[in-house]
Length: 192
Image (cartoon, rainbow, N blue to C red; front, side, top):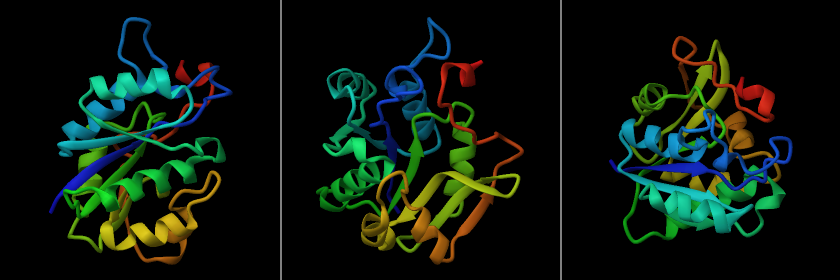
């Protein structure tokens, strides 16, 4: 089984004051994008694809510096759905066929490699469908087997990624509340 890490990092981060991919939680530390790519690799994904959009001219070189492959979501301003569609379309057409995509968002500072690795334990082939949960509340990362990619691309619109597919399709909830909160950051105050 081959799993590719898929980091969605295309948003403008309007409430954050700029793209979250470029945000640093510590002035001398790595960006949220560098952290997300490093964690998804440490969880077991040797290949990582980063979807960029807003400020692509700044985010793309940063993503490439991590060794990740970069995909541009030209309609990124539609919302997360556009990013997920672009990433999955790229994986479907890639010459090396992956069986699974471990999807994470760039703005999840406490979702560690340990959380991602735990979600990966639910992988059992291209039919896999799982997501992290925090005290029973579904969240990210989401593990999408290849068998689900076309269906997810059909329903991913606006700020709705795989949510509608997950709502109607049986999947595994992997409890990770003992490891993280799974919360995202939207404003500078959320980083404190």
